[in-house]
Length: 120
Image (tube, rainbow, N blue to C red):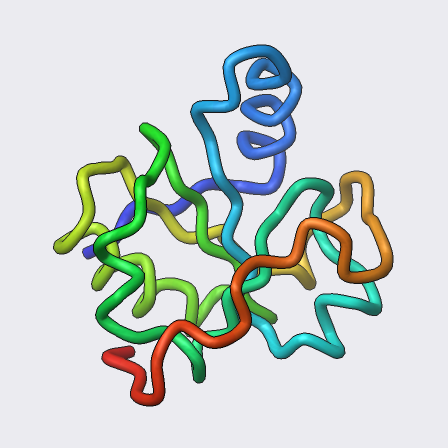
């Protein structure tokens, strides 16, 4: 079972991480939802576009996966946790539960095309 990070825990980690950037937030929602609002400095990697190439990326020490309500992110986090060298967790309650700062737009958006098939 994949670990979960609460919105409060993520807010604290993001505040503590300002200098060393050893934490990544991966938002797996569709690009239009991401553009409408997302956790600051998160990377948009829609679940439908994730392919095996994602495992070869360089990952920080900790990764928190966010989706709409915290269900899909558990599945993606579990697969990532099994395939990358990082502590991976799912954001409990997803973006719906996030009550911290929100950015609009697509600045900082990750690679949109990471493969034609999704292992998730």
